[in-house]
Length: 183
Image (cartoon, rainbow, N blue to C red; front, side):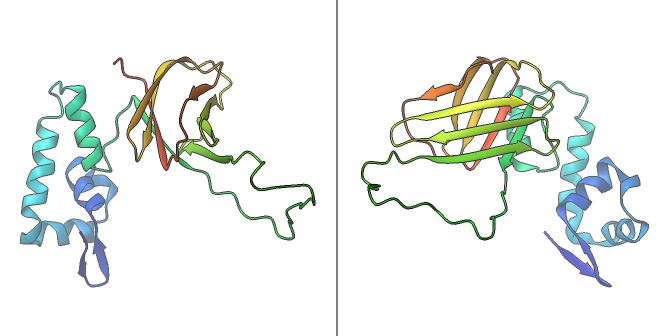
């Protein structure tokens, strides 16, 4: 949702901050938001959330809220996104006369990191299996957690990250979450 007034753009994050963190937005944006009657419903929604913030919500409700409101994140769920690796200029693939596409195992590798760069997940997908490695950049053993692979919404449990998880299917992950809540 975007509103323009005198070259100032009001986005959903601004509406959230207007209710939860008013000190984080400019006075101009506060004035525009307060005066715009079309934003009343959205502001009331965030106000109700704030009023109910002290209530103990179920984990399922918290997860639903986190999916709908990008500014709301669960403390025990960490989202990881694909790491974009810049292409190396002048890099050429090796080609061998004896090489055959049919004989070479097909494998794709994706690396995922969270915004704070505390966790790194490496996904190696072969034709029929996938190996998932979870690393802590703080060099700690991570224990008792689930990973959720999107867009398939697949959930797998790790007792710890000392060994990779091997899955008997090829998976193409777009986003991964680490969930530390007890299942």
